[in-house]
Length: 193
Image (cartoon, rainbow, N blue to C red; front, side):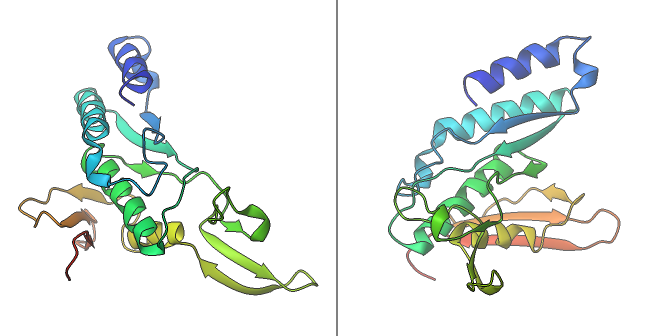
């Protein structure tokens, strides 16, 4: 984001002929968020780049979309992987003020779709019977992380600012402008509950 996306967005949005055709600026989230063994609080540069892009787009009345993330190198525990991906989504919402967040890979995966470290590639793992029928389905940690948001935040809802949360608590809130409903997603990133 800090390099190409900001450069292209500045060029397009400052061009009075091109700007009317830009309904959104999209970015791919491959700026360090591909290894779940990292500490998510170490992404200050990436967070700043997201905030700068969001400010630029807000100035021009253009939405920001996170349009692709797919590869990752998982850490050793499923919870650490889920927490890491949730922190990425929180960063994209908080700093990038995204209106859309896209996971590129398939919904399904199976034993043949494992990445190099043996982690699942999709949102859910399907296990099949020899006749091709589904024996069982299990959510992956990536699916679990996305589900924490997609179950409660509905299309068209608007993000609300949250201030004063505990340093180990990530929080985001969205509201339905017309129905008066509110959704809050929390992540306890600390060592105690």
